[in-house]
Amino acid sequence: MAQQKAAGGWTDARSAAGNRSPWLMTFIISIATFMEILDTSIANVSLSNIAGNLGVSENQATWMVTSYLVANAIVIPISGFLSRAIGRKRYFLFSIFLFTASSFACALSPNLGFLILARVLQGIGGGGLAPVEQSMLTDSFPPEKRGQAFAAFGLVVVVAPIIGPTIGGYITDTISWHWIFLINLPVGILAIFLVQLLVKEPDVLVRERAARLKKGLKVDYVGFILAAVGLAGLLIMLDRGQTEGWFDSTLIRWMTAMAVLGLGGMTIWELNHDDPIVPLKLLKNRNLAISTVMMLLLGVLVFGTIQIIPQMLQQVFGYTAYNAGLVLTYGGAIALLMMPLSGAITGKVDPRLLLIPAFAMQAVAFWSFSGFNLNSTFADAAWGRFFMSIALPFLFIPITTVAYVGLPPDESDKASAMLNFFRNLGGAFGISLTQTLLARRDQFHQSRMTETVNELNPYFQHTLGQMTAELGSKTKALGALYSQIQGQAMMLAYIDVFRVLMWSVAIVIPFILLLRTRGGKAA
Image (cartoon, rainbow, N blue to C red):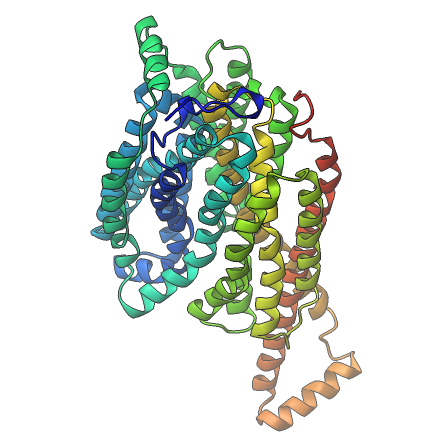
């Protein structure tokens, strides 16, 4: 392909498409990333089945989710370094192979220990896929067309977690939980074949890697160890904090200490290292710094709501796992239609004009959910999810696009790793935040409501008398009354969570005005 030039001095010399269409390359590399991101949510609805089959408690089974998140998060920040060290295409192929092989191991797991080990390997393989794909897209498309390219990537990142619970629930209910992992085999094999055949390692990247190896490959071992320790501590603390009783647990106290010492030490070390494995100095770029914060919030919104909305529908309204997942799928289907539109518009207008109304619409959607009551219907939940999902494409694509403004081409892989890491970290924050807040507010509302349930309250006496007459027993009446109180308290707790998410979204909107567009000089 000729060295085509675009705005800002971009050339296609670093393109992974070679002499083929970059859109063909985009489709091919998205297959593996879709498979990996789907696995972040597909297994969650199958925890009870997996626990029963392996003879462990559901609380123990959640370690298969935690182990995957930890391994995935540790690999993402160093994926840029690994792709530069062994070659971007070679690293992408290795990641697909490891993810696919470990998926097969997950399906054959005879016990929980083997499953957790396989999930760790799966997380290591999957962690490199999204950052490398995003880096390939950045290098293969000129700035004015990146919005459309990131729209394709956005379909993977936004849609895969939405349909994951529905697919996982259906497979588990109709076949077996083993197949939520086995379906990765044909997809992974196809992805390896197509990437090997049709994706190119650009000559300029080969020369850059050869020059680095000639000088001697220096590995920032200290930075990697500090990052691994800190991230493992942070994610285990966030994921297990609520179930372990937070700081009443020795495990959580140790994990907190690991997080503080590891991440604190990593920050100091990497800021003073010439070739850091986690390039924190890139955050001096204003656009990238603000974009990582917004991507963190986007992770909270996507993964937090994927967890809490089906949970609300099952706990409060009595939905099955499959029907609860359908709410996400029906409500999120609009994202499929809006993603190409967002990609086309992003390259033509100021991204801030898309981000502000999109975040505002998210706030309105959470406000809508905060108006739920015990009489709300499937349609109410699907419409609420609809308005939430319609804005997601107008968040993900502009955030991703504007993050690269002012960055040199050879820093794109590092920036991609940053964005994907903060998105995954936001997902961990979102799940932990919503679950912790939900449990605390449920206790609060139950306590306040039961204060009035006593013989001195005439309304309570009247209601108890009516229910006793209907049920024929005071004991049954008290049980039914307490069950109603539990349901109402839980509903109020979910409303509180949605209100907190609403204000979290609203607070970030003013920071969008600080972003620089292509026409400005990046900080």
